[in-house]
Length: 628
Image: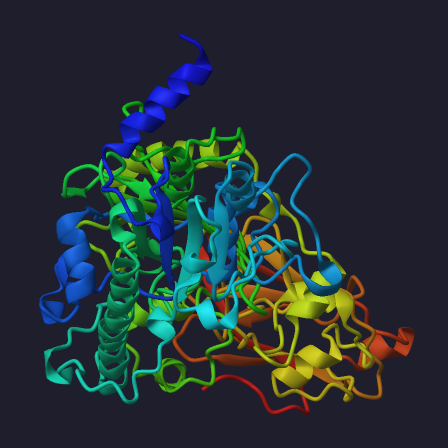
């Protein structure tokens, strides 16, 4: 039988699954496909087991009851533009350079790599009418990708499709960003349970309750969309997919973080036979890149080589051993984190250990984040929360997310989990071996665009490459102003209290642990009993720098020797162990007798193995400093 006749018989077989329509709505051999793409919403819904939402999200719950609900679906990135860029191409963002939030646009505009295109392009080539109502937010040039929808038809965009053409469309939903101020059916605040990785107070109780409200309110919006489809006699020929781009927007360990909270999303598919199987719940691990592949399969489009997903309903579907999520720069906050989720565990690899996990970011003006930072500053934050937000960033994290979904207990150093740790390391390395464009720094043009007033100025060391240091203290004028320091005084000052650049340019010499401690300190161990830290790129003058003060404490007796421009400044200082900081003054009088400019400082330590050293500040003696 020729392929031509086979296609005719296949098309006739499909027609038997759909009822005959009026002339205005003639059936098509291929289904219509509608993505209901929600912003910033965790799966806090009745059908996902949240009792507080039982009966409060009826539309979504009904979709789950009549369709396929995926209980463990994860996005490739926990922020909108990166997730959307990955899903519209079907490839993880780290494979093709779309991994930085809101990049590849404006003066930094770029196209997709040669030979690569979006699933929209592929669908259009096969005769689909493609539309989008709302944001696109892709990190590459995509002008003209979707057909224009007249304003009068934005409530029923499918009506713009030419007669006889199936459609592939997206309608963007506000989700967690929806304004619930006037919403009447609000969640009972007294019934709200705050996730364990957040402060248990009224501020966070309200944040959590508002997120439940958002899900309820958007459920009504979805109901209206489905009603309009039904009115236009399209429900029987349309596959409807409901999902979110990442977790809750006002929970800072959800949105923008590759955690369970940040990457686990609702995912429900409803539609006619033969495209969607009988109602069911799928508990296997699913990547939202699988939706991209499945969408092509529904349309009969061959999957291109760059796509990483699978047809979820194919007989050849292979259950995943893991799903992967990546986080890079979000707004002005630069980071690089890679995370994989297996059946029971989440393994995370942190690449930038010179910053705490909760860096300065675009939500810093919000009450819930002010509350968190103030509690840490005044010492009232629960120690477990202090550790996960402001503690020293670990190179690796491993969590049993079945028993610890809030990811509070890092199992990396627990010998009982060594076998699992090794397995996850191999899985991670195998995933990254396929390519990671996030291993380098962004070009200056992208850094300048990210460092903006709208979201906030950048305080990461990467921005120093595009800034000026006019007073020679080794830190740019912009960074000093952003951290309430004088950019023109020409005085040495390192306070270590900016979570976005924890070491402020100091580097380890010798065998030391990570010198970046909790926010506010340098903190490291002398593994062999000796080691140094140094700071270069200084141009300090004698007029502004008379002596140096180091606020320091140690766990054992330690000898401290200071050098400037490789010249020993004074005889070693003997430090005694204790809980209180000792003030060490290092005069520069003799140094200035032979030197006209101070370019580098080195502090060398000698003690017993594994001695812990904590430094609160290093500054010129006339400055007030130190941390409370």
